[in-house]
Image 1 (tube, chains in turn green, cyan):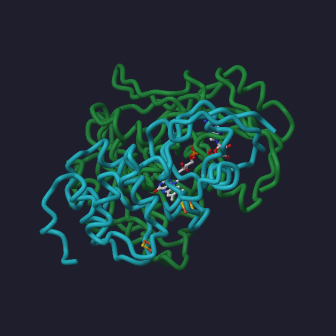
Image 2 (cartoon, helix red, strand yellow):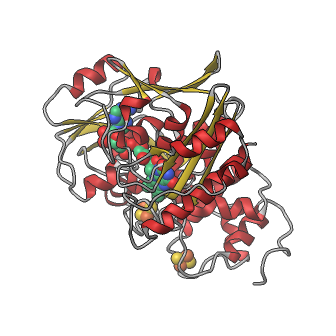
Image 3 (cartoon, rainbow over the protein chains, first blue to last red):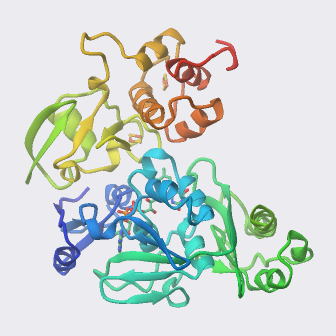
Length: 262
Length: 161
Ligand SMILES: Cc1cc2nc3c(=O)[nH]c(=O)nc-3n(C[C@H](O)[C@H](O)[C@H](O)COP(=O)(O)OP(=O)(O)OC[C@H]3O[C@@H](n4cnc5c(N)ncnc54)[C@H](O)[C@@H]3O)c2cc1C
Ligand code: FES
Ligand code: FES
């Protein structure tokens, strides 16, 4: 690792100020950032730890919306969101392993936007709102291709608001070595329609499968998806699976998610 | 350099650290607590599992500066006050839950966290919980058996020794 300082502000205002310095970067759970620092893929001069900021922690539900503080760990979401949004809690409880879940955060996952990460699928399928220190960002504007988001330099995700669906499920086909999604599908049924978000598959990162959404909005059952297929064009191909295999998995996992949610 | 103060296995330690000092380096090189092993250094293997404020974390993926003010537990603090093995460690010995022993500190620390949250886990729950702890020797059966035994449960249902 290159050398850097670490600061641990206890308020959001101090963190924003610290991130205004040259070459400063936010550090949340570090489960993604520390490995990339070891590989010298990043060279910050100051890391601004977000873990001591109480106003970025916690899980609360009100008026059909679940709000997660941006610094809430996967482990806390798994425990505390279960009563309000079980599919989201289940997703959190299957990220990585227990030690990763005790550090990794929802804000870190959504800021990083790994094309195989789980939270982006939940956020997109739920139509979540990203709350930062300076504004609110709608889902439609947030994801901008793999590892790219609408966040500006130094902008901090302080909270994420998830509208709670009537029914939902996330099915992840695990890449067994990394435990990330080879493909993951999040299906969420709301009173005004169904949203289907796919992670792990596209070279552009998480995306909505709109044909499936239309079919399911009329008839929320796995059979409504019969005959629907996804094109392999633009899907990832690697040693773990070809683009055609991923395209096939999307269809299968979407059916399983609908069956699990219904 | 930043000054950090934390308790490690109940003792207060205060040291100057660089920003990029990992907890594995702090424990092993500064405090000479070499029971926390480094298998992969990429948060995959769990050999470096420690407890920070009661939660299991991978010491290779947390900086010492982030543990300022924390209560840290390592394998060196697990034995009973009289120096005898604690119930989990004793069960690993009784059920041959280790061969080379490299993964064992992390396994014992992870098992302690599991049993704190879930005192009577099922075999499936134990296996799921240990997903982040890799052992290249034992084939896991005897580790699962040891944790079953440490939780006071019948071990005869787990594959033969
Ligand atoms: C072994 C292992 C298995 C894993 N398995 C999975 C899995 O199955 N599914 C999955 O989805 N993920 C998985 N992960 C990734 C894990 O969920 C990470 O915790 C997560 O991607 C990043 O969160 P973090 O809090 O650790 O962020 P960090 O690593 O601290 O930061 C990541 C990036 O986000 C930025 N950042 C962090 N917080 C904020 C914020 N609040 N606002 C703005 N920017 C911020 C940082 O500057 C950095 O660029 C795994 C990780 C490991 C090590
Ligand atoms: S050395 Fe930390 S997980 Fe392998
Ligand atoms: S006993 Fe050798 S790695 Fe587990």
